[in-house]
Image (cartoon, rainbow, N blue to C red; front, side, top):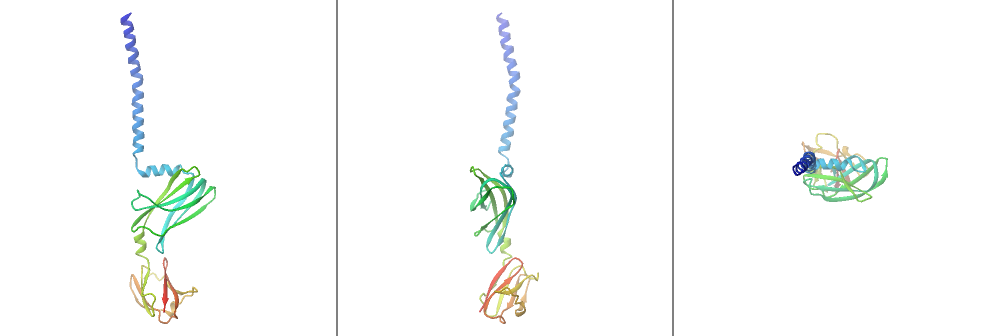
Length: 229
């Protein structure tokens, strides 16, 4: 009886080991998969957050205009959306606050939003759009980048301004024939302006035939205020 009882206990113990060992292995494998996902890239986590948002974002982008980055986005639908937060960064990791914009709450129609960064960073700047619902849960929706230096290199400048006769205007508009000079009422006065010199990145205009007043040099993307003395 002693040996039989001892054998039974040993058999029972071995049976438990045989059953539980695969469970332990499976549990360890599952934990490794969880750890692998937890250590995945920020883009993976960003995608997960965006897919679980209560906002259906259509687009988020911006452009450089008159020294500011003008941001715009629109949504196709919103569920309990309290507000949006616009942030900016130089590295895509550390973010600074730009502006908070109220959301539409509950909506199944197209909604358009705008914001502006009047003090953009030099060089490449990242902008992130976040959404916070009525329960205080925030979700990152989208990130885009813009190089302010590219826009600044195309910006026009006039010197001397004010002027009594000639002034030099620099910019990337030269050679495109898409610019003009207009008075304060929007009338084209280019027929009263002489072009003294042109180059690939500047033009020299003689305004001496114009009356003393405010004028505007307008190209495709820029608007420069000119003062004729």
